[in-house]
Length: 233
Ligand code: CA
Image (cartoon, rainbow, N blue to C red; front, side, top):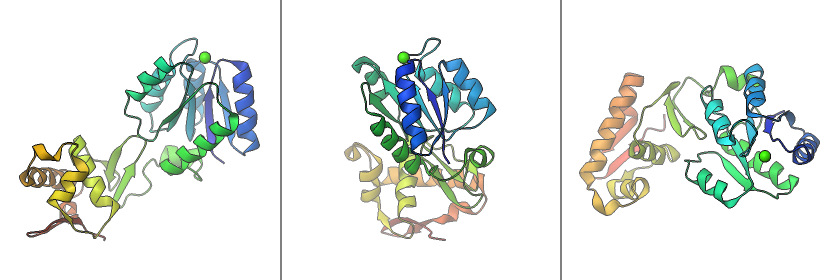
């Protein structure tokens, strides 16, 4: 059963959501303030947080930031005004989402399901996640909510372009990508860079893989005169 942390200070809205989520077999912890929410999550890890932006003691964005200090919990924001929405859209949302009030409880349940599916949290109990945030010690793992790639359990400190490049390779292991294809996928304005740029970034990703696990750099294979692929093994 997935555990939902609901932070909403308007009792009428909160009651409707608690009822709708519990009917759909979610375990719900409801907090009226940001401080209560942080305390509740410290006692027990949750799989997803639903955060109202306008709370009495802090904003939902503050709560999100504080929650993320200890884990990569996905978040669904509840916003009351268009202005609030702009602030959220300014963030890198990753696996997160938002809905604007008024909304239907059914819509919230559907969004929660979609976010949990995306973040791979759909079935795993929060307790397991808390002790084992990366799903295995082997190989690559993409954490969608924190937008980080791990190798062998170690988070890789990648630049934005390196992250996008590696993600393209990870999505189709064994497939060879030409430098042009990689440029198209990982750069918004590929006209401004050259094939050499791809080579330089691959070199840097390999160095970071080697640092995480010696030998791992060989998982990115060079196909001379063609491009790069990620070893399927
Ligand atoms: Ca509110």
